[in-house]
Image (cartoon, rainbow over all chains, first blue to last red; front, side, top):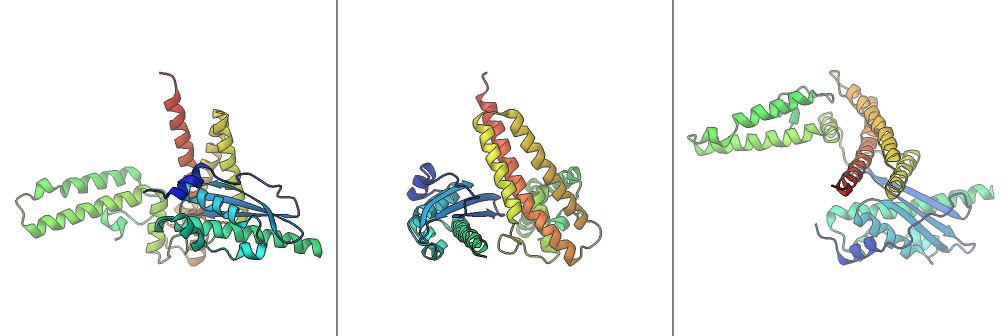
Length: 130
Length: 179
């Protein structure tokens, strides 16, 4: 199967690979897995006082499409508010990367990772405000 | 298609793999096109279809994950990403740590670390296979048992993916050895 140019570009030069301190109260960590292929993806966000995502990092063990999807996701959510980031849909990723049908689950994984990172961040904030 | 029926095996998880190979070989021999040269067109077609089916059944049963999937389907339980329970965050955390550990060990060529991780994950995979074997034994599983076994199938896929990665690393290292 041929990868699109954009997938290859992201897979060869992934943006924002790395880790943020998961114990930082301003960092939300999302961890998702794809049972079908056994791949795992971790996506982290660092949110400022104004609710804007200052930084995003990811680590993905998976195929080129999974790496490209998470790389693109971190690029997109940086500078967005968490509400804006939460509105990103997997089809946006599919369209941007021209993912074929068999690789759509990679984009679903990336969307889930964003949502799970935001949920983790919100949970931390709530606990702090209790 | 019921792959167990095709190869004449009891529908259990812990099948005898040697017996599986033998049934497949015998059936392939009996259905070989050379044996049907003088036969009519419809008979030739039927034997060819059966040979294809036997190959497909063998392919499904020789792999523990697809064998378990076949057993779930026979029990009326849908399998696949959308129909199965999500892996727990604690489990995913473990998988992430294993994968990171493996990537690190590969980078510094730490053979012992790769073997240690591989042993750990293999043991976990065996544990999952044991649960699947006791679920899909001679007795029909109940719905609660099936639910627990579904989690094991999901985890088994992650273990298998990890062990494939270990094999890939071992192969790459073999190729790099000076000749």
